Amino acid sequence: MKLGKDKVGRFHYALSDVNGIEIENSHDGEPVTYLHGHGNVLSALERELEGAGEGDSLTIELSADEAYGRRREGAVQRVPIKHLSHQGKLRKGSIATVHTDDGHRQVTVVKVGKFNADVDFNHPLAGHDLRFDVEIIEVRDGLAEEIAHGHAHGPGGHHH
Image (tube, rainbow, N blue to C red):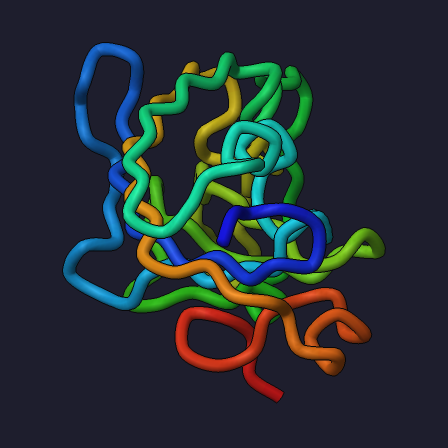
């Protein structure tokens, strides 16, 4: 079975910059599980995964524009700390999540005060050309409920 619209794909990946410096990988945890054709992964990554099948390994290079976009100047804003979701102590360089009118956004902490933090709304990987080394673990038909919800369910996917 091949990845295409309404198929659920499970894959492990190693993400690095174009110089080969690893940023993250999924091999020590659950593979990513997503519903193809529903915008659950980067659109350029999804386009490159189209037609791949179980057992396939791919190297996919994305420009910054295809990945998380170019860095925008003036994207730093002051946010009350109580509106930031984060793990561990909040400090400069920490990645946090904030709820916006456009949904949840990852932000990078620039400065921490007593009640507020200055955060950069650029995605932490904005401005970076990226390389994904992907290993397709499984491809299956999406369940009717998954298709209706627009995302995969279960391990590595969305839980209700």
